[in-house]
Length: 368
Ligand code: KG4
Ligand code: ZN
Image 1 (spheres, rainbow, N blue to C red):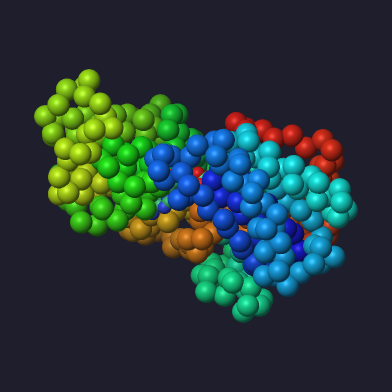
Image 2 (spheres, rainbow, N blue to C red):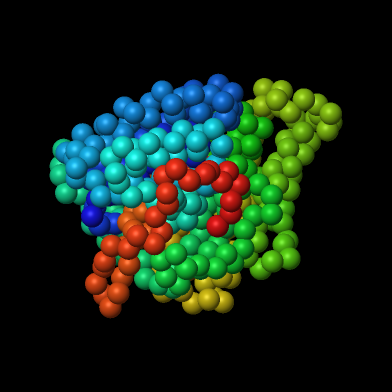
């Protein structure tokens, strides 16, 4: 079964084709990072317009690279929640129209849940010419119960999956997502957007003990908070360069020397990552999952991988970085599990999760 997945929830127009929830046939991502970088963050109206411009060519390219025509596609999966409303509308309207015209069943997909499914793409590649032949894939699919740490620009949560589609939200951020904190701290200290990769790079040159930053204490055992950490960075920088609270924050970076900038990048990264790892280790001890997976853009962070390897007794497999950040492959993979049912080890097509293309609405702030 071949599923075409469409993802447009934020600033990536992404389409991929996945076979049997396991083989990646193509993965096309048009990122808008350059367009938004000048503003230091995603501008929703510009994002929606850019999706509109490239949606059709990105779909066509995904089909071409997979050597597929619409006759080969069995279903369409599309992100309908959560995300920027204008961006979600471009993807869902495209999917609805295609579902009607091409007569394909349509599956609405929750973006955050889908991030976890990059870990199920274990089949690898079928065709060397598809543009995905240099991707790294996990060797083994996660085994339930699966503890998932989902960390992106919009989400930070710990979820325990007991089966496909069956999960419990153990904890989540009470304010900013961790990726958002990386992005905001980068802006304060004068590093380019997106903040995650630029902070990680600067941190390699810095002393991670140079600035002492607080870790939030939360009521929920697995909840996170990153807003206080971001403010602590702001206050520490104001203090370091010798200005008051009323000094314009966009001017702070000019006063910061490279050594201090790198030191703050390293200190912030260590504190933020330690917070994630503390909660993941606690959830692991309490729930004894068989597998642990890390999903979302922040999964690319090498310090996170290092600390988890040090503190968890089981090994974690990571998908290719291009499957950790936003992509259509994770949408198509979860789409496959929505479109099928495993009964006594045999997989059969099930239409119970299908949506009427005339009825599909977006849900910009729907949590998992
Ligand atoms: O999952 P994703 O591509 O988009 C969302 O659904 O949000 O995640 C993007 C986020 C951004 O906040 C970016 O700064 C962060 O992931 N990120 C990283 C790294 N690479 C990307 N954060 C920390 N370290 C990285 N290496
Ligand atoms: Zn995402």
